[in-house]
Image 1 (cartoon, helix red, strand yellow):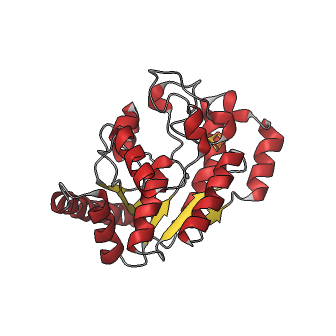
Image 2 (cartoon, rainbow, N blue to C red):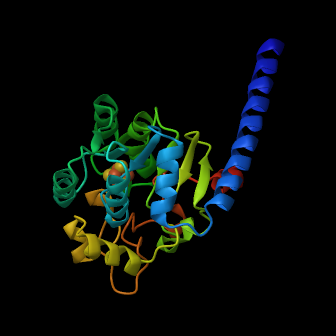
Length: 262
Ligand code: SF4
């Protein structure tokens, strides 16, 4: 019993030490990349962490811009998407058009079929509307577990997070350490506005999800995404029945959220 406790303490110390050195590294990287363009940030990581960088793409406008930038830098960079089984037909079309345009193969990760079967048979096909616990369970099964597999051999995770998207993203930095997945997370479009995005998409003829033209600025799973009305927050259509501070699926859980819970 004592031995077990000692072992736990040693691992805990080791983790804290590793986290502290990662925090220092992340601080250095933020200072080094301050004021750099999204393309420069991507190029830096693709070269510095060769073969260990991946874009987790939702095939939304931000990730399409990043895909275009990455394809211009190095087409062999890993780009993957999660097929939860509940996405819109327009999203599959965007996937097809993206692979065609850039001559790449966006890797598709699916959830574990046994876990989906068990969850749906026990809780119902639309369990997510019944409680936050059920919604998080569904996101865990359909998104988080496949994400872990997709990221297993990756050190740097590229995301399309923009600061103006929602209240949960205000404190985000360009480079962060994701202690849950143990990865460096980079947000090259952090300071981009909606106008910046569409200017880039039009200029470079980037394929985009046609739902963006129908009032969907942020696109996730079909049952959990609705079009927004004029003047609403861009993420108001995601999990619209929940309060704003709960609106993350766990893919972008922040360390300060963890601290608050602890
Ligand atoms: S967004 Fe909705 S359908 Fe998709 S994984 Fe989360 S709860 Fe399930």
